[in-house]
Length: 461
Image (tube, rainbow, N blue to C red; front, top):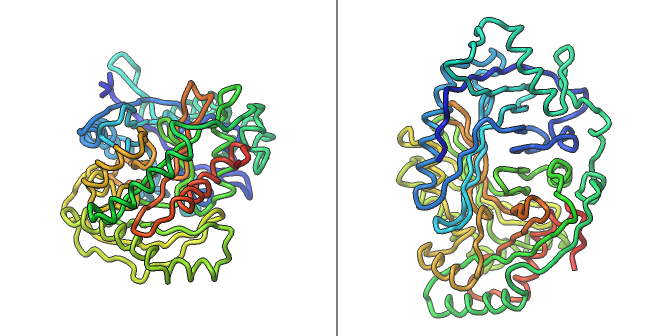
């Protein structure tokens, strides 16, 4: 945990974006410290005012305590402009990624950026968060010129400018680096694909062992992951990689927090005051299949429906102690993404108490969609068969604001930066149930790695 000397002060300004552009269009010219974007709207964090790292079984509680001590007070001391009141994530926001397992050797992170770019509901804003001490000359809350000057200095530090209320890159030419040019290859980092912790044969054997355990009625479902590594000859530029993901997977949440980044289609839990919602995905067909055939394969296949039922029910069961009026969409829908089709169930409910958002996420994690059923048995078997430390992969990732609102996705379709950013370890997992075919599950992992491989300019073998 990190003690924060002094106190925090924030300033939020409503701004305009260049006509016809979104926050995602700024990414190629930025070096973000955190990102959460859906269809071009959301958050981009730049720089760091505070960075909390923690490990172990108390990681959710420790991050929740830090949030309550340092971020929550800003809701009172740093009022928002009238146009932003009631908009979730407006003002000071922390981005977070939390490890899948309490026994992971990796850190869980909570990052408070010094500069936050936000956009939602047709309104854009900039928030500056600075650390102050008793020795600092406080800025008068009514001194608009001084606060604007403070924001302008931070914008310039991060290659941005604000002129006549319009936010843009200081070098506007960088905003055009989308599509293939926005990949790591487009930033002069040559990349290559190498084997991860284990071979494909190891994964096939793990799936066979999982199916056998299910056949022996030790459990109903097991999620097994594998990894590959993309190595580069220079540190990867995350801004262009994230821009490519946001462009190609606009209906997914493009994320960066700590050392994990990607584009996830799955919302673990979204909190707006006392209201919560979630999106459960389980059951997968490759995106190369036609929509009608994919619908039939997902909705009519007992294996696919059973895998999905277990995932949705596990979330309902885990949220029941902290939520009421829980409702799950029935029957599930078919979600079409560029790389895969999924069975999808939306869940809604209401918190029974003012439970801190991070502790609600702890209650929801892990669902059967990324672990298995029953959870304890699946988790034990995963540690035996995978031979991986997942780190942040398949853990909660997202943001929390000072008012207690939050988005926590599941860190899927992504990877973990390593070796000072010169390589990224990609992960993908599959739900194993009775009747799962090892070769088909291996092929599914490649389909799920497709978003990151494409953004990194790496050809799938």
